[in-house]
Image (cartoon, rainbow over all chains, first blue to last red; front, top):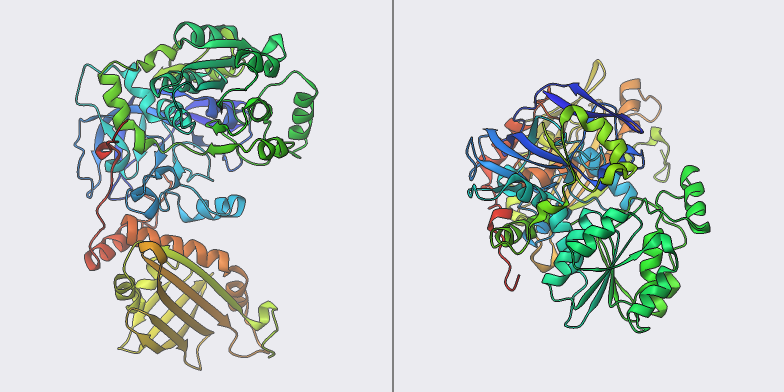
Length: 392
Length: 195
């Protein structure tokens, strides 16, 4: 098959690789009909995720058709149209049975789990196409994918009325935006600030309104993303390039600060000020792995007693997190990999009911051969790039 | 040899625990048959059960295979198992498994301790030195992760896209034949009140 293969920092090539096959009894093989490039793939592309090996097939957002199944697969048949959730979960361990699917005890092969145990204390579950810390499973920017525990992580689409455009994002970014809002524990009258208006931020804006937010204020530095937040998301917007984000947020909330702040940026936040320079230098020297400037802003902006929700990916060590401000204001932090399995089916029902139409984030449609160039375009936010989908 | 000697020549003791969503009796039933241990303990090549109390062990270290005979020295059903190598083997091995109820209905805590020592303090042949170097508590942790995968997920997770040379599928199916698989929760079943 052809696949997008990681070779090193800023080096993704489309190559012929062996077709995947059923390895374990609960596996399925899915022929990919649509996949996508995620903002978190940029962390791989930019070389910030350890445990990548040349030859790894990347991509964790994908959907397709079941073309083969293992002997213990019960609920799927060859020919089923499915969306595959990007975190791999066994469905049987304590975490899966307690609705914390992304923390699955059994999906990460023991060798990978040992590395994550060392880095984090305890290992979470595996992910598709996201380094050998998360299992080394091949990903979906390819023609075929081996899907372990297929009964658990495939959402069958028996309704042809749901387009690929709308269904695809059930696998990752739509549940991620939804959980980010849910973590804010939104009460009537709440004002929610969303830092970062990429696809996850845009879905967080929509989710916050659906969960009862009175107002949503969106912050970004890319004009077309702010435009989407305003036009499609009905959010009030702040352009970070105009400066003084904190003063504006304060002013817009009557001096209180937002009730909750969502950091939908994560570890590669961009900041023009001295802090941004500090983070870039330390990151280049490997003295700091993550650049957390959006998180710092979120903490400083949040009202006393408020909540900081972090769907943006962090991987290692961040410097100068104002924990004193968080302590002094009695903030609550909610974060972590999304429990996709918890939200995907209920969100599919919302898509069917037309209360969410996730396809609006798509800005570019490409074939597999165009993937390497698309990484450059997406990373540099050229050509109004918000979300790239791939028809392999 | 002094008891507090921590050099590789003195031997190694690996000790780890894992919590598994199974009853103590289920875990005991699997582990009481010591020939099941190589299904998850990667460093052991083979265990052959000779009779109720004795088993024959083999570990391949490069071109050499280390052999010994072990005797079951403790067997408390659902609670404890311990075995010890008989004198005359290639290595002195001691193993201990303790099963405890995990609090909050979280299944069983499996505490496993394995130690290897040279039979003669003065001579440690190269293959035995290699085993003593590579077997650590961290490696035992990896092996206990595989045990949990077998007993909970019903298979051993592997990231490879194609069937590797050495597949664990047969081992997983043998375990499933001994102990019925757990029911799986799936994303498709999820409905949330008030969503």
